[in-house]
Amino acid sequence: MKSSMHPFEEILSVSKEHIALELRDFPLLPWPDFLLNPRRLRGSDFLMRWSQGVWSEHRLIEAIGEHGKYFAIPYGPSGTAPTDDVRAFELYFERLEAAGLRNIKRPDLLVFKREDRDEINSFLKTVGGVQELPFIQENGLEPLLEKAIVAIECENSLWKSKKMPDYATELSAQKRLNGKLGLKKTAVLPTIIIKEEDREPLKRWQDQNHVPIHVWHVFYDQAFGIPLDEAERLINDGLIQPTIQTFQAPGGATTKKAIYKIYYRYGYPLGDAVEEPKLVSACVEDKNGHILPYVKFDGGKLEIRKEAIEVLDSL
Image: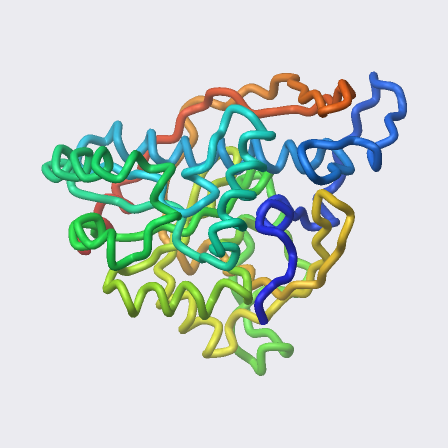
């Protein structure tokens, strides 16, 4: 079922279990009165979510590029939108809505071989830069898609994965999985997340464009990846069951969504943090002069693991 929620609201929706940030040194603010452009923003959690997504995609692009053998570019709307101004970010999605592209679903990144960089950059200049990609149908992007070796769906979590309680817990036979290997339902460990609502659109995109999709999940201290086809096999074989979560959008609306939390052991190690990011204070001013403080990510460095390069080489 297609969502009726505006794409800006959709992309900034936060799982209610993750809305935990408290700004203790600021007075109580009337969040329902905080206005960006045409809509309301009910808390700093959504700005932090936006900052977190921008930061994780940038770390992946940077890490791939620094290795030297490959490079990546933003492809989906969340990565091609402005990243330094939440109001410009909102207006970008207003433009998507006006163009009738609200339900567009594309992977977040495309990865290419280093030797194709000049050709890819030349094509991007002809279309007006990466920020214009979501406004172009796939049949107009063949020069990109023909060269892409893999497309990436990005996810991120605010956890130090190695400190999660069940990080080292071995899989064992589970009654709820009919004796198949797994972990208890309440296990807390790194997972690679796929949303149920994204499964069919991503599989359709992969089949139509003949570019394999992998899901890359970035944690505070490391990252993991898995091919979409392998994730589908695990789900279809009953090894990973859906989890129902309630998501809240910036305007206050809530929706229930099914997600799949795929144990990191089923994927491949993608990268290690060799420099931690800093959490710095920031704020945004609404059109009425109202200030909303939030925390954003700054810096940090991810180093791509050799196992991930071997995966790219195999493609």
